[in-house]
Length: 236
Length: 236
DNA sequence: GGAATAGTGTCTATTAGACATTATTCC
DNA sequence: GGAATAATGTCTAATAGACACTATTCC
Image (cartoon, rainbow over all chains, first blue to last red; front, top):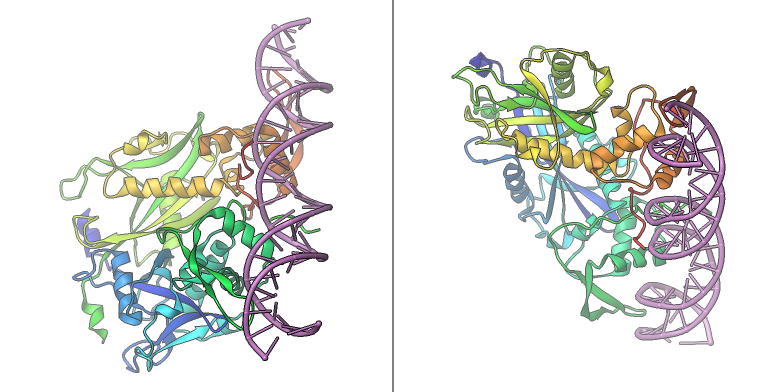
C-alpha cells in the first residue's frame, strides 16, 4: 500500500496574483524570471511565486504570505485562494501543481522603489491579457481577474484596494475601474450606505471643487456581501 | 537555481466530495480506509481520493474524474474544484497537499450495489458533521457543504441532483433539502420559470393526488445564475 | 364532499436605475 | 456668475414574499 510514497511526486508551487488600483487602472504585479538557461522561461515575466519549501512553510497560505512579503514588503490585507492547477505539461521539468492565491492591496501602502528591476506593475486592460507570461500564468491571471470581477459585483472587496481614508466618489471610481463600466451614483451610495460598513471621519477632502466627506472602513475584518449584484434590476 | 528540484516534494492527492440527495436528505459518499497498520487512519472513513499518479493522470481534473468513476461507476454531470489544502501536519507521512473537488449526481443514476462493503452514503445533517473522518476530511467536507449551500442560494445547481424528469415540487424539495429551510412556492416557481432553463415533457407525474407536470433541463451544459439569491427581499 | 397536492392571482415592500435638483467650492 | 463636483430627492420598473384562491386527483 505505502509504495505510493515511492511514486513520483509532482512539483508543488504557490503563485499569487497581486492586484492594486493605481493611476486609473487595475494593475497586477509581475516578476521577471532569472536569465538562467537551466530554468524554463528565462527572463520572461511571471506571477510571483515559487516552490513550497517543506522546511519553512507550515501550510500553503503561509507560503503564499511569505512570498507576498518578499515581493511587496507588506502583509496583504486580503488574501484568498483562487484554486489549483496541475498537469503533466504545464512545467517542462515534470508533473507540476500550483496553488494560486489572489491578493488585494492599496497602492498607497506600497513602499516606493522596491526591487524595481525585476518586478513591474502591469495594467489589466482587455488587450493586455495577451501578455506573454511564463508557464500557464496567463490563464491563471485570467481566472483571477474573472474571480475578482465576479466578486466585486456583489461584495465590498474593493475596500481592500483603498487607503485608510477615502471619499465615496473615490470608492465608486475603484469599483468602476475593476468592473470596467460605469455605475449609477445614487444606487451606489444607497447600497454602500445601507450596508453600514463605512463610517465618516471628521474631515473633508478638499480640491478645486466642493469638498467631499471622507470615510473609513468600520471593520477591516471581512468583506460585506450585498443582497444583489450591481445592476440586477431589469433594464427599462 | 534548479536545486529546488532536489528539495523535498510534498505528497499530492486529490479528494472528492460527492453529494447526492436521497430519501429526503443530502448525502455524501465515504470510503473506508484499508485496515493496514502501515497506512495512517486504518479502517476509518474518508472522502474518496488518493495520490496523483503522474504516469496515468494528465491533470488534476482527470485524476478526480478517474477516482469518481472508480467509486461510483459514472461520469459526474457536475464536477467543480473546491480548493486545495496543504500543510506539514495534515498527513503523518509528511508535508502533503490535496486538491479537493466536489461533485453532484442524481441518486437514480447510481448502479445499485457497487462496492457496498467499503463505501457508504452518509446523511449531512448539522450533527453528522462531527463524524470522525480520516485526516482533515471533516474540514474539507464542511467547506464543500458551505460552498454547495452558498451556490444553491443563487444558482440552478440542484438540477444536477435531479433525474432526467421531475416536477417543480420535486425540484423545490431538493432545494429545500440542501438549504435546510423552506422556500415559498410562488416565488420559487416564478424564478425557475423566468430563468427559462426547463422545458415541459408531454407527461404528468401521477400519484394519489392531482398530477403534476414533468419537466426536464433544456441544456445540461452549465448552471444558471439567478440575479438574486433566494430570500434577498426584505422581511415584512 | 374531503383530503392532499398542483398551480395561479394579487397585493406589498424593497431597491436599482434614471435623472433632476440642490449644495459647496474655486475661479 | 460659471464650472465642477458632492450629495440628495423623486419617480418607475422589477420581483421576492406572503397568502389567498382555484384546479385536479383519489377516496
